[in-house]
Length: 124
Image 1 (tube, rainbow, N blue to C red):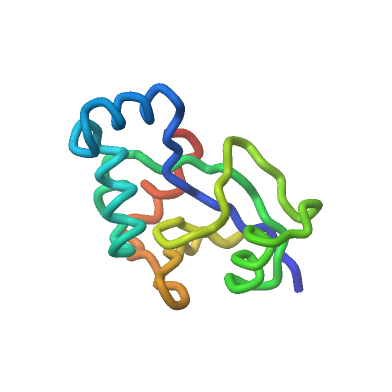
Image 2: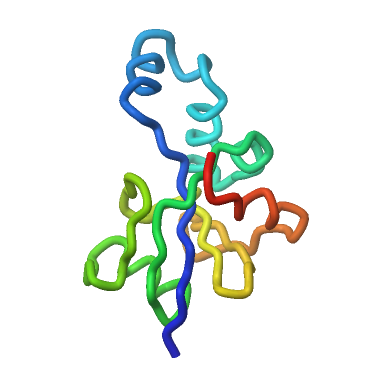
């Protein structure tokens, strides 16, 4: 049965992208957190430093379906709140009960409950 899942991503805006291009990835915690999340699936730095933003809600049956909808649609199953990239490694998906999972290279890993409250903040 379909439910609403929340999608959290590390959003890099134009100003921050310009700074990173000028000074390198080490200049900002969001850049370092995004690299860690995307390369290693490790979201701890990003969660602890409030780098994640709720970018969308997706109506789907399960995590695999969220991944599919977030990458190929249909668009009418997505409500966007901010710039949303395709769902990828390091993104956090929360179900309607607040259970969070991290998108990994293969599949999903549940996020430790101690990180749920921090990850579920809706603004960065």
